[in-house]
Image 1 (cartoon, rainbow over the protein chains, first blue to last red):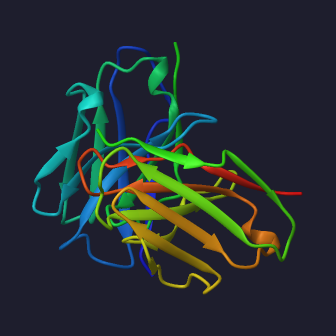
Image 2 (spheres, rainbow over the protein chains, first blue to last red; image 1 turned 90 degrees about the horizontal axis):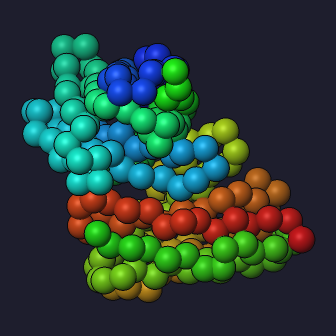
Length: 113
Length: 107
């Protein structure tokens, strides 16, 4: 059974870069698209972007080029970097397969000094 | 960006009753519409993909219909575990977008 697990700091200072990694287990990262979705506390869901195992990416224009997603097929992982964060970036961050069939449990990232 | 509108905001029903949730898109998404269930503290769970296909392991009481701009999720007979938040999501155009959700709670 495919499982996804997010990892990374739960607290990031304003103006710094948020970094998260998603580890895929129980299956290969190859031949699929993988993405990041976030959900501010008590609010709805927003796609951040996605990556194909080959490395091609697509990002939500609302992030104004602050997001970068990368993949490491040797480790069966993909990662998110979000630069110049503000309090508005405080959210639960989920990694997921783009077709929605598999999601990580989510990790809360708080932006605060 | 395609905007999804869901109605009603809240649906108050009793176990055993039928639930009908609506999702409307600001432009056609063909059949590229999915439904998710989310419970507090949990990740969304895929119920329906491509408007009418049940995801793996989803009970037959969940069904989806529609195409173009109007879609419906029907839960034929609510069970206690079905009281949750439901989101629709389109994958026709990037960025993929979610609706604001419908909360199904116990009457």
